[in-house]
Amino acid sequence: MHVAAVARNIIASQLRVPAERVTDDARWGEDLGADELERVEVVMAIEQAFHVDIDDAAIESFATVGDLLRWLGHRVQ
Image 1: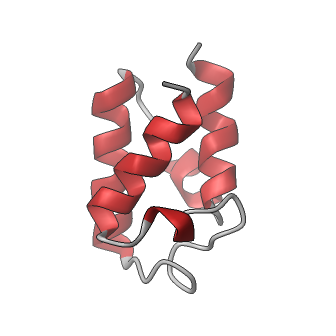
Image 2: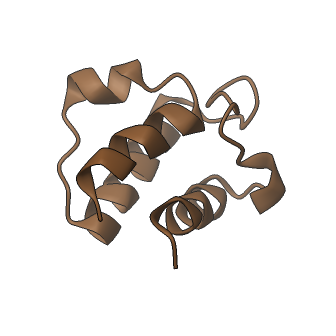
């Protein structure tokens, strides 16, 4: 399965939202209803699934799902 598809499934599952809401331009809080703790839980699940470490500066830069997916795409083949 493609990295972005796996990541979207993780995000939808962690946030308990329909997968079709997890779009590239979906904003964490405004569109997906995620608070800070939920964002941390999503990041931890992504790190575990893809065996990557996402530093705090990168996490803070992820305004949208697409931001996270682009970061992940550059690091996971």
